Length: 328
Length: 186
Ligand SMILES: Cc1cc2nc3c(=O)[nH]c(=O)nc-3n(C[C@H](O)[C@H](O)[C@H](O)COP(=O)(O)OP(=O)(O)OC[C@H]3O[C@@H](n4cnc5c(N)ncnc54)[C@H](O)[C@@H]3O)c2cc1C
Ligand code: FES
Ligand code: FES
Picture (cartoon, rainbow over the protein chains, first blue to last red):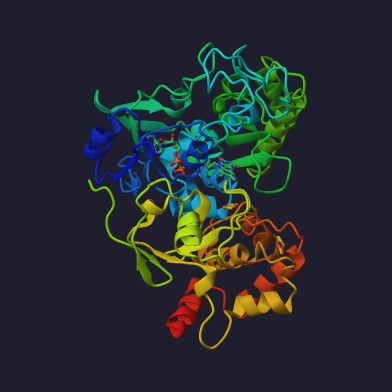
């Protein structure tokens, strides 16, 4: 039996010390890591349990919230201020996984969960540049109905599976990190990378860097925000396409808007093109559709997933129309 | 920092954590302790057959490393019945034909009890329309959505839903009423 250790970190300093050891990996709820260890895709030799670190949701001076990395998904979705001030976040969290899994899953672990690409999971039989850099990708010519249409590369077409992160991307969330080189902050939209030539490098984190918290800056108009997830069955399935959006409309005009997409790219996809097209313009279904089309201009469909382009366009349009309808 | 400390309380009995930290709570229950009530379906979080209660919250024990649960109170299906008979939900499953083969049943029952606790704490679900509501009613849609982490390959879902709904209406579903039943068992 290979030697294997487990330790529970009492604070950030302890976690960082233990996390620096070769072969060490942090563990939150374990709902992704334990599965991947069983599949031999992850092979740590030491686990550092970080569920004992901050599990508070604190109100920040000047507005906004600081959410500890060890906050469980259920607690995040239930928090009164999250539900009322950023409903998109609460809705995104409860759109994911199951009640049992949300009770276990932490905010930090949710952000760093890995793709559900079936070829990535098939360690015994398929080629995957994420698992074995340089090996090739069986998804590109394979069954790729659930794969990426935006920002993919010739090395990898996997998507990021998190619902929560799509809402965080829309809300301008900032991730707090700590590591051997000191503490730093990274916008959620810059935490995950596009695959390029190195799909095995999924985030900008250094190997032993730790997520300590995620900050929601004040965005009062995000009270009017929501999340819509389109999937193969009504519950308990990953997104084909999802849309997180917040909309501020005054006198029929779009004052401000945030849109992020899930299920379409290697990272939560902030729809900057669509946002730019909308701000200052009319809040009409036609304008929403045009903005969605502008965002999807860059989409490159694979053999089986061309439907996602129209699906994403329609879902963006529908979500913005729903949010605009609520202002009248 | 400590490697592992304390015991895991399982159905009221302290159990030392496994030597190998890779052992799941599910395997500890079934393989080490011989508590076969909790079932292994998929072993990857997808079916809910392995659902147990930890400090009254439902989790899937197949994705839980046992070492992470020292100091916690685990309750499995094996301990739900009291001296005075079955837990009200167990009885309701019989009355409503809430199973055929019975493989998913322990997970369904533990999950429903945890679900009732979530409802009391105001945890929203995917189908909750008003997120600012203080009280969430257990409508048929809410019940089905909240139980969607538990699959039944026999298709006994209609019986499962009515058994849970009836027990909930009778005020006998929450972890608190279940704890009472457990205490009576000791
Ligand atoms: C059946 C099933 C269905 C699911 N469906 C959905 C779904 O529909 N939508 C969705 O969004 N998700 C879904 N999930 C995924 C689930 O949301 C994730 O598994 C969960 O959020 C991961 O959190 P965790 O705390 O358990 O992470 P862990 O498994 O503990 O860790 C995941 C990764 O994060 C790292 N990590 C953890 N904490 C930190 C930290 N503080 N700092 C640095 N690194 C850290 C770990 O090293 C590991 O690499 C599903 C999972 C399952 C099993
Ligand atoms: S055995 Fe745990 S969820 Fe299926
Ligand atoms: S009763 Fe057979 S799986 Fe549910």
